[in-house]
Length: 77
Figure 1: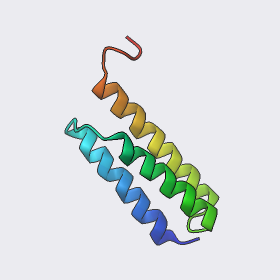
Figure 2 (figure 1 turned 135 degrees about the vertical axis):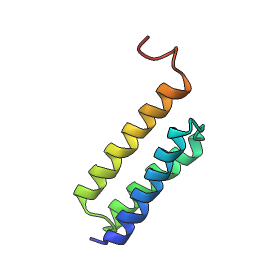
Figure 3 (figure 1 turned 90 degrees about the vertical axis):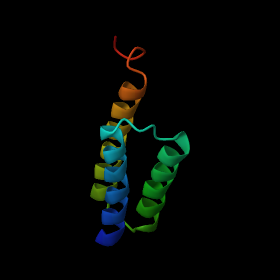
Figure 4 (figure 1 turned 45 degrees about the vertical axis):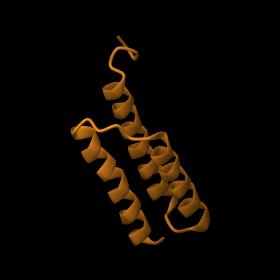
C-alpha cells in the first residue's frame, strides 16, 4: 500500500469538494479521469482495497452533490 498515492487522490477529490462549495461546474472528463486513476492505482497495488473503496465512495458522494447542485430541478423534486 502506498499511502502517498491515496493522499494525492484524496486531495484531488477534496479539490472537487471545494469547487462544489463555490458551485463550480466539474467537467465529465475530470470525473472520468479520477475514476480511471482510482481503478489504475487499485489494480497496480498503489492503493489498498480499503483505500479504493473509500475513494470510490467519496467520488460517488461528490458526483451526486455536483449533479444535485447543477441540476436542482431534475433530481428528486
